[in-house]
Image (cartoon, rainbow, N blue to C red; front, side, top):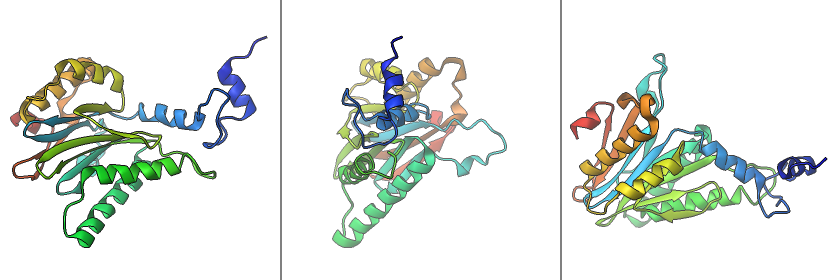
Length: 239
């Protein structure tokens, strides 16, 4: 009886370590980590003509949880924000590393760090955990948004340690469906206000009856004043 390729791989131990390639050239532990990311709640990031924002689904339904203790969009510096999808304990380690990097750069060079330098360093850490034995890959995708001089920027780092710059992107649950809709709706002429409306409309279409405004968190940076602003729930509609 023929045994499926996946079962063969597991039987032969190709998924026992993150450093062993399967005969097809896959790192199975890394691919498993990518599936973990897609189990996390979704975030949408978008570069607009007047700034950049990240809109995230906090997915908090339990009334026993104090909402302010749960966040999906983190402040890295006063000009950089980040959102994550995947294992939140893994994400916390990377977020704290990014915050330290931002402060070290200010102390050393007396200037704000570029968003790409943050995501590049975080990506380097992720890559190391897919290359050396005795550790597993970080089960996290990270989206970093910020203002570089006068230019709003958005980057996403995946599980493998690869990163790219985007005009608009999504991470987490149903990310492919969300990105497909963003390709149709996104325009470089969008302002932050209009961009947030587009992102909310996309979430409504994808989530359907499960859409709940109270679960969303918005953080945005305007390239004029470069001031970080945060809104949650129904307050987002007032934007």
